[in-house]
Structure formats: structure tokens, C-alpha cells
Image 1 (tube, rainbow, N blue to C red):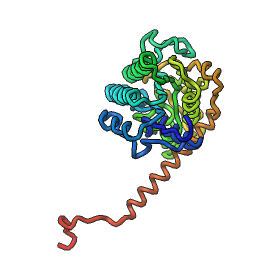
Image 2: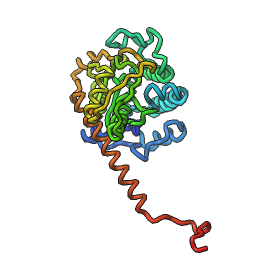
Image 3: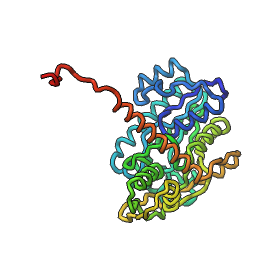
Image 4: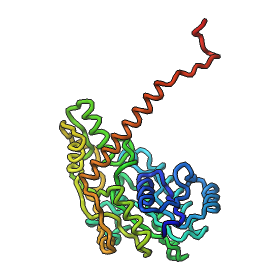
Length: 334
């Protein structure tokens, strides 16, 4: 992959897609096809086929599919599973059909069994039941990973499969009802501070641990793998450091300057008790994360504040515009 290669980010509007796009542009890869408003509908096979015919992408980052936290997984498991399966199958099939030179598919750490030995190595995949709160989504990700490997085996396609740690950063979903733990907590901590709330309720006990990966580091690792990894075997993508949900919440509260009390609702689920990845294979290839966790949280929080300011300005501009009156129903002169 060089700086003139035609590169397609399938799922460019997702957190992962936005981060990969920014990193590619920063590194001088400017020939991004299907970017932004020009991205085809991945669920529409005919439209996507026309895109491949016309744009002929050479390298594909497959990061498409809806995702969310425990709440969204429990509320809309069908939506999450179908969206990921349909988008992923279409992209993999057409990437093979149109002879894409190389494709990187990013799965999910939810694909590991709930009680997999920690840190989770790829040998643990399919060895036990999945975490019930995210099983349909995880099964979709597993299925696409298997399909990716099947293309590699049967057709010698250069399709590689990586499982990233829990990613967060700018362009994340900060909606508490659908977002993952870090963006949801950032928004709720900020709103609690602004409202002067004396406490902030958080689901679970706080004892569960996660390996978090800043989106900028994730994107850098994805590009690194596209250039340096060709094996059929799945590879974990992360830095190998776990953080408890309690510690995560404390860092976020301090960053947002929320002075109230953190209240743990143990009637709500924790999800998987531990979710760290064995990232030695990636480390042995020569990659490691660059951004420390508190710095990544601060950067994400500042981006979120910037979005609030932007929205406030847009709302003010809309209010300042003269009202458009439909004269057919105007009674002001009657």
C-alpha cells in the first residue's frame, strides 16, 4: 500500500473509520475512495457493486456495522447482528469479486468466550459461551471473521482479521443509551457537573476490567497491520493494559471536574468480568500504543466539548434566521 493506492474505508462514518481516515490523511495517503458523503450504502449490494466497478478500490479497511454498549445490545440485538452481517458479507464478497489487493477486517473483543483465560489469546475463540449481553453482536463479528479466513484459505485472498481492544476517542457515540462505557460516562459526568448533581449512578459494581484503546492508536495499528501482516490467523490489536471500570469512571470524573459521588448500581450487569487481550504477537511485530490513558481521556473530553460548542452555535444561528411563514395559513393580518 503506497500513497497513491486507492483505499476504501468500509464504515468510514464509524469511530474506527473516522480515526483510520484521519491517520491515513496525516500519513499522506490521500487517494481515499468512497469517503464521506460518497460512501456507498454497504447494505445495498447493487449500489456497492457499482462502486467497486467504478472506483476499483485496491485496499479495504472493513470497519462497518452498528455497535453499542450493554444497553443497546440488550435493546436491539437483531439490529446490531443484521447490520454487521449484511454490511460485512457484501464487502467481503465484492472485495473478492473485484480482486481487491488486501483487506483488513476489524472484529470485536466481544467475540471471546465470557470466561476465557486472561489475557485473551486467539486460541480461546470458540472454546466457550459468549457474554449473554452481547452474544448476537459477537456472533455476527465471529461469523465475518470466519468468512474472512475462509476467503484466505479457499481463494488465497489477502484478507486479514484483527480483533481490537475496546476503542474510544473523537467521533464516538456519546449517547448514554447507545454508546460504550467511556463516551457515555464522559457525557453523563459533564452533564452531572453542569447541573450540580451531587451523585452520578453507574451500572455494575465497577470491578469489571477492560482493555481500552485510544482511536488514534487503533488507527495507527490498523495501518501498520495492512502494511506488515499477511497471515490467515487472527491477531489481537491493543496495548495489553487493563483498567477497571471504577478507575475509568474516576479518571473521567476528574477530567470533567465532577465533584459529586460515584454511585454503583449493582443491580445492573457488569458484562464480562475481564476483557484484556494477549497482544504479544502484535508487539513482536514492532507496534505499541503511543497515547497514555489519561491523555486519551482528556483529548476525547475536549473533542466532546468542542462538539457541544459547535451545536450551540448552530442552534443560535437557526434561531437568528427569520421565520419562514407559509402565507396560506398566515392569519396575522386578519
